Image (tube, rainbow, N blue to C red; front, side, top):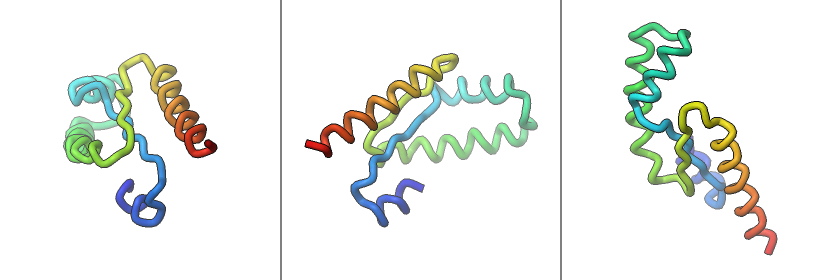
Length: 88
């Protein structure tokens, strides 16, 4: 995870992409139809733990439902801006 990467490469850029909410994530998982109710429960519990780690990342982006293009654009912008700063 992020902590392991930062130990090896402290200057690494880290971006945490989080769901709009746990409720939105649950709705998405149900709609996707690939997981049993028990698997969804486990994934949501894991997500809640992972969300607590977001503060350790350089950037946090909210992946809103039906806005994947916007999320991708934000990631690209962060990477480009970071590379531009390092090039100067």
